Image: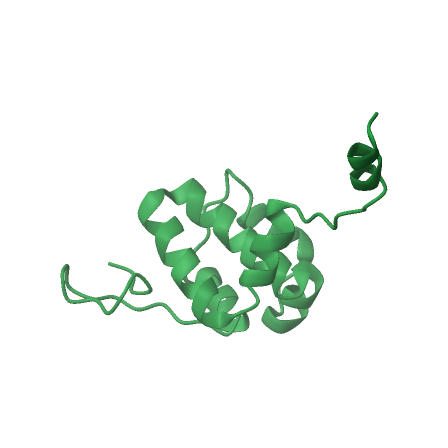
Length: 116
């Protein structure tokens, strides 16, 4: 190996994963809301996955369970790929995450954060 190559091989570059980056972004409530709105528009499965990502970024299932009064097991089932949450459960989860659901007429939303 040449001299230049050996210099670069001794330099350690910090790496982050996509999941780490996403988790960092989702700690911001505005970013989390926009992310969930985009997931909601994609599909039911994408929305549940998005909720799991936001939950992970904002304290995890144990913290969510404490905030909602629901069991961790129930939350895992509800947010699983086959989950079918009731509206009341969804409202509890969203509120505990510091977010709210909003509905607007098509073309009237302010940014992507509105659920249409």
